[in-house]
Amino acid sequence: MSKLILAFSISLDGFVAGPGVSVDEPMGKGGEALHEWIFQSDSAVDKDMAAELAPRLGAVLVGRRTFDVGLGPWGDTPFPVPTFVLTHEKRAPLAMKSGTFTFVTDGIESALDQARAAAGGKDIVVMGAETARQYLAAGLVDEIVLQLVPILLGGGPRLFDGHGGIDLETTRAVVSPSVTHLRLSVPKNRANAAAAGK
Image 1 (tube, one colour):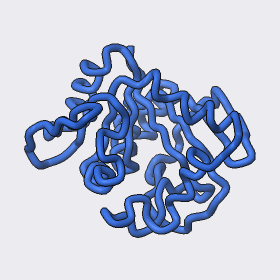
Image 2 (cartoon, rainbow, N blue to C red):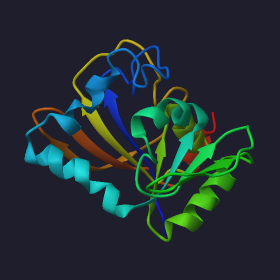
Image 3 (spheres, one colour):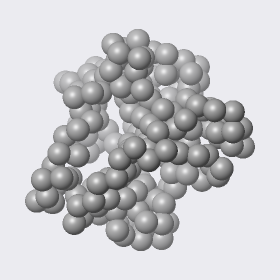
């Protein structure tokens, strides 16, 4: 069965982009530094971690804001798989070179059901902090993959706002000179469900 994964590079102060995210500055002020480990690191560890997610990925879920600011830089779907956009605006599917954006207006569970059907048993990744928080609050997340980047952004979208009291299990921690790679499972239990629903 497909796992629902939150996968983010995150600053030490908890931000997944800098302040002032916009179409002109999709990662906000200073936010590009979160992804330097992907493009500039010579570490074999970083190269392995950067390549790890794509082969197991069958679909992507994004929020409308992430779609709006990301489409220009991506020039395509963010990964070469079907991508489902949570939105309030009805819109026809948008076919791209590597996949199709499907716009879902009837909630996060419907979007997840459609993504699971499209993923064919492979995993699903969530992009966008607000959308990730919605899935976490609903108790639907199976795994969190973080790259903890040693910078302080001082502002921007936070991944975990409003989500205290959730017990996570560290299943991997790998350190490179640029970043600490963490994989965390989200146990499905009543305490976590109650905390997520706050």
